[in-house]
Image (cartoon, rainbow, N blue to C red; front, side, top):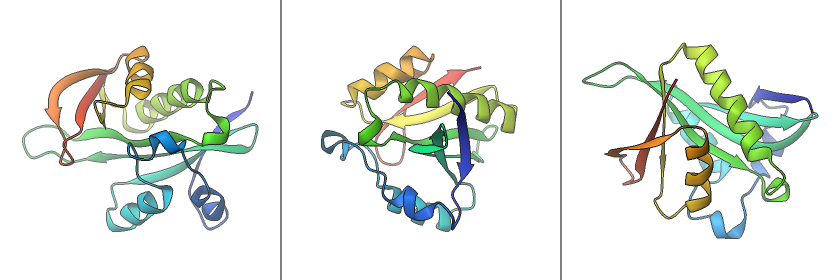
Length: 149
């Protein structure tokens, strides 16, 4: 299987906007439209499409954000697999690819993300990759997880 990660551009934006999660997950993550709007407002965000064999299967948004009291933090701020591709192993494959991309791009020692505590399937996935809760909460009252590289 060929995996690729591409920036969101005018060429793939419409396709990105058609991505959606399963109905039971809509309270856990913003729509891709909301994500792209946030990316326009904050230059730290980098939205990307996640592709398997040149077919769009998911979306992620990441960035390196300056912190007031410590080094900048690299965040995997959004990560979703389209409802049509869930349950096929793409979450695991794409998360591994995103971790590798973040480490390569930022030479980071840690990756952060935040999650609602009742999003059990996502927590399970992140924990398989070594993400652990660090006791912090983000501005939306989501629990923060961190992976040490």
